Image (cartoon, rainbow, N blue to C red; front, side, top):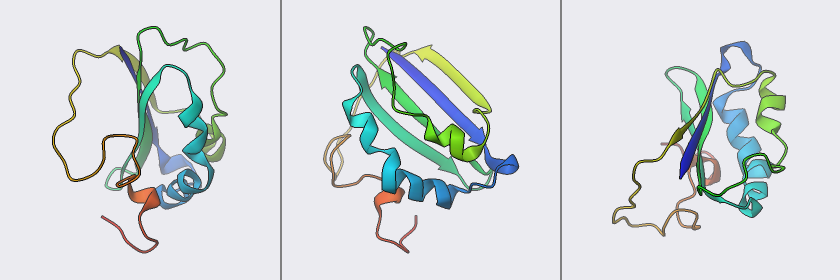
Length: 119
């Protein structure tokens, strides 16, 4: 299994964590549900450092050269990620929690929280 990380420093962009959160809710998430070999994708942000990005877990046999959904994040932000890396995954585990397992609908993250509700 492989993991990829894309991480943007938004300091040079007109986009904000909030505007990118709207992008995720409105159009950014659903196209990834049909990507073959993608086990999990989650988007991350850090308001203190003004950074935003995504982490993806891929099956070992995933064809990472196959067509992917359009990279609208790069288009919206205006430049490629500050950090982009791929690495091997040594182990994964999902612990006991109140929501449904990853990819379910109970807790989908801040982009899908009630408007005005923040962590």
